Amino acid sequence: MTRVSNVLGIENKKPSIEEILEAGTFLVSGEIGPPKGPDIEEMIHHVDLLKDIVHAMNITDNQSSVMRYPSLATALIILEHGGEPNLQVTCRDRNRMAIESDLLFAYTRGVRSVLCLTGDSVPVGDHKESKSVFDLESVQLLNLIRTMEEGNDLGGNEMNGPVKFYPGAIVTPEADPLEPQLLKFEKKVEAGARWFQTQAIYDMDHFAKFMKTAREYPVKLQAGLVLLVSAGMAKYMNKNVPGVFVPDDLIDEMASAEKGKALDTGIKIMARQIKRIREENLADGVHIMAIGKEEVVPRILEEAELNITKL
Amino acid sequence: MIITKQKPFEVVLEELTGAKSVFLVGCGDCATLCETGGEDQVKEIAEKLESEGKKVAGSVVLEVGCHELDAKKEFRGHKDELAEADAILVMSCGAGTQAVRAVSDKPVFPSNDTLFLGNILRYGHYEEKCRLCGDCILDATGAICPVTRCHKGILNGPCGGTDNGKCEVDPDKDCGWTLIYQQLEKEGRVGEMKEYRPPKNWNTVLKPGRFVIPSRQKGGDEGE
Image (cartoon, rainbow over all chains, first blue to last red; front, side):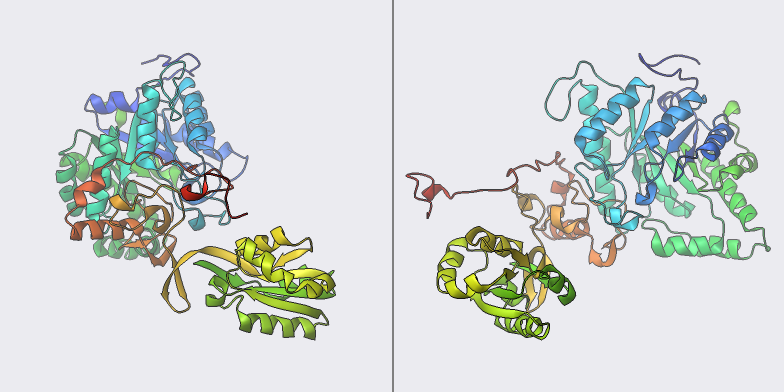
C-alpha cells in the first residue's frame, strides 16, 4: 500500500494503525526512545531494525521528563525510512498554541496516529527546575484533536482547513485505586480516543479481567509489554513505577535465571505473554517496549511466533 | 495567609553589602505567624546585623505588611531613622516588600522567600490549598482543588502517576484526584467526575492583577 496522505506528506509506505486495527488485524508496535543529544545514528539503526517487523513505532516525547531529541523530528525520520510512526504528544512542555502548531506540522508531513498523554511531572525528570506547563491534559488534548478535525483551533478560530488523525490514549489496568482511572478511561473514549495502549502489564489474569470491562467500549486496545532484564528491575518497577505490578512468580523466574541469562528469560516471558494474548484474544494487539534493548525485539517476535507479514 | 521562609542570613548580608545603616520592617500578620517577620525575628536580625558591624537605624513591625497606606503612615513616625538608613530590609512577603518599595525611595531588600497562600493546619504547619486561579471550580470537585492539590493541576481526573492514593512527585503528598474521587463517592456524586472539563482560562485576571471592589468603583473614591 503506497500513498501520500496529504499535501506535503512524505510517502506513507505502510498501512496506518487505523487501517490495521479496523481490519481486525493484530497490531504489533514497538517503541523508539530518542537519544539525549544530536547523535541519532543508533536511533536510526533501531528504526531500520524495527520498521518491517512491527506495524508502527511509538516515539516517546521527552520520556520521564528527561530532555531528548524531539518526538516530532523522530516521527519524520521514521517516515523517511519507510516506517509508520505513532507520535506521542505530552502536555508537559507545550501550551495549547504550541501543541496545535505541532499537530498542524505533523499532519502536513504525513503523521497519522497521535498518542495523547498528559506527560510525567517535571520533578521526576532531569530538568527539575523547569516550569511545567500542563495547559492541557490528555482528555483535553483528545478534544483538541477533535476540534482541529472540525477545522477549528482552541482560540475559537476557524483554520483554513481541517486535520485528520487517528487519536489514541493510554490506560493503566493496575492503577490503585482503579475506579478513578476507569472514569478517566471513559472520558478519553468520549473525548475521541479510538484506541488505547496500556501501561506495562505482567499479571495476565488481572489483565484478562480488566479487558472484560474495557471490551464494553467501542475502542481497540493494545497490551503494553515492557521487557524484563533482571529480577532487580522488576522489584524496582514494583516499588517506583506507578501502575506497574510484576507478580512474584515472574520475579522468581527472573531471579532463577542462570548467570548472564536473565535477558533470555525476559525474552521468554514476553514471548509467552504475547502468545497468550493472541491465543486467548485478550487484546487487539501488543505494544512492545524493549527500553534500551531494541536489538532483541526480532528475537522476541520470533519466539512469540509473531510475523506481521503472516497476520 | 501568605507563607514565607527566611533566606539564609549570609544571603541577607550579601544583599546589604553596600549599606552601613539599615532600617528593618516587619509584618504583624502572616510573617509573624511564620516567624519570619514578627517582633522577635526583627530583634534577632537586628542583633545579627549589629554583630556584623551594621548599624540598625530603627525598626517597625507594621500591623499588616502589605498595606501600603498604613506603611506610609507608620513611616512618618520614623522619618529621622529612615533618613539615616542606607537601605530598608523588609521581613515580610514579596507583597510586603513591594508595599515598602511603593512608599520609600530608599534601596529596599527582602529577608524572606515567599512560598504560597497557605491554610493553617495548626500553629506553624501550613498547607497550600488554593492557587488563586480566578475561576473557582470547587463546586464540581467536592471542595478539593485539583488546580492546587494535583501537582500537574489537571482537570479531568487522575494521571497515570498516582499510586496508592499518593503522587509521583512525592510519596508524602496525596493525589488530589484520589481525594476528590473519595469525597465525591461519600457524597454520592462520583458521576459528576465523568463530566468533561474544557481547557481552563488561565488569564481570568490579567497579570499584574488589579481590582477595585464594586462599591468603590463609582465616584473615584478608591481610598486615595
